[in-house]
Amino acid sequence: MASLNNLPVLIRDRFKSAHEHGDLNFFETRVTILQCYGSLFQLRFSPALANKPKNTKPREPGERPVNPFLNPEEALLVTELGSSHIIVLNKFSIIPGHFILVTKEYKPQTELLEEDDVAAAYNCIKAYQNYGEELFGFFNSGEHSGASQPHRHIQFLPVEAMRTGIENELKWDILADSLVDSVDLPFTYFASPIPESPSPKKLHEIYLGLYNRACRIAGKPAADTSQASESSISYNIGITNKVMAICPRTNEGTPLDDEEHNSIGFVALNGTILGGTLLVKNESEWNALRGDKSKLQHVLGCIGIRHDIERKI
Ligand code: AMP
Image (cartoon, rainbow, N blue to C red; front, side):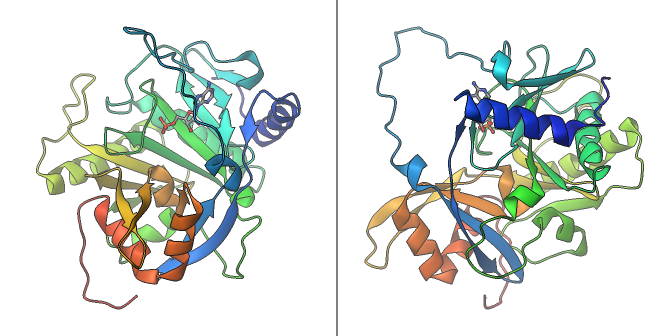
């Protein structure tokens, strides 16, 4: 595997150059902090993304969608990791340095992660830690998980970049790191601590253990580790240097209404929710979630296996 020693520097340089040359689209966001039970969530909204014209060009009948990860754009390719993975910059980012770990050859996003996938993901996180920086990784798998690309990939967000520009003064941290302490949330999750210097085998065991717990609560078959197997559930994984967490998913999101019960949009969530952050698409959703604290609790209660708690926000 190629050395990842200077990964944070490499990512920053490549991001800057790709941005300056117009090879990637970076969207500024407004960001505020909301609370659900005792946990803090970043709410993000990008006015530029909301006003971006939709691509209305009709697809030719039978035309296959392009796989952006099989032959990634030169300007977005950061490095290769041995024969198994590559790292590319996210072409559409709202956090500077958002990058993606991709399998070199096509593998389905809906199959279970393999030992080399989780090991490569952890090595990226470790490379940031060696620079004194935090990195949050997330994986979206299945139709309700918020995934859009079928080629296997795990995404990463530099945490310090996530902390910039917060409108209120609250101190926000990555949610996953708090989940081993059984935090109350409206959705069911499972979390395991990651020991110091884990072997690839140990990391994979942690992943499979979480996955099997998620399958059990969803009433679905657990992993068949004797072969590459399709997941029986939709789920998100969140990973830091300390914790791996899973959220089994039953819905990508939920419609949102204003106070007069008029529909104002649909809030869709992916694995960033395990980092404690969500992005809305329009200003009405942004205002509604900021104006009524019960709305975040409602949204979070709709995405997975409900975990109802008799408790005020
Ligand atoms: P997901 O939606 O979880 O499957 O993640 C796929 C990610 O790929 C999204 O965050 C997209 O912004 C990103 N993406 C889409 N097209 C490209 C591309 N051509 N190059 C790099 N990243 C891309």
